[in-house]
Image (cartoon, rainbow, N blue to C red):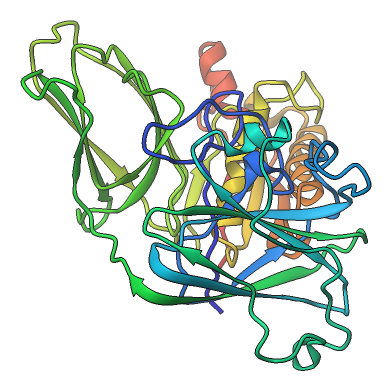
Length: 396
């Protein structure tokens, strides 16, 4: 079954971003059990299947709003149904697990911050809803569907919560009644003065050259930490000195790129970002997953890269990967130690992903020691560092 999932690219040492045009400052969250790490739903024609992480993430989101209600195990979804009419949803869990839900309407891009300071209230909620013997025996009746009036551009946040440490899946089915909007790709021009020279970003499929409606976080264009969605973007070149770009787009590999702009702002620049489509056997180097010397302990710089990988797997829920560890050992002088260390590091990545809500069945950890060094005879520290790496390979 195809699954719709969320976004969501993150940037630098902070957490997931949420899009409301101009964007907002991001907060670190290593789990979609937190509002700031909410899984973003894009396709409402299929049901979502999200795995409960078994915990409430970094923060109890309800400790101020409902003093008697404490998070135990939860999943956050961000919903933008794009309908003028009514938005309906149904929630199902496996194994007779009881659950509650809270639906919020987000007035602006500071929803999660307002939640933290107890300045929001749910538009719908049920703190006792459960199914006793599966989908067919919904105690509220087969026709029960939570629903809310919606307009084009409305954004909702849905929290699904259980009091158990259950790590199975929750399923959400959607229905939009009314006029449903159609998303079309278009050039988005963010220049305040349309006469300014520009930087144009074009997002294309690496193999076909066709436009891709991608999710991007772009820093360096005076709109930092904003999530942009589309195929083509134009920014003023007078404010662009260097760009840092991240993409986590469903069906494609994570994309990270830093671009140093030309010194002369009085020119127009066009930059094509080529995203590579996922396919079995394809590999991706995970930038900045680093470890302490001769250890499988992560260095702090690794956290953003691990979160990117977590969001990638949440977005592409059916993908299985092999996590590949590599070390620097010219001449393979100590093959037994190198193999063990590389395997331990691959397992450390797998363990971190599992602890943050990814099904272990989707993860395989393999150590390759020094058998696949990029530089067999490294000449400097950069080449040695390049040999020490973690890659992923798509299994299916």
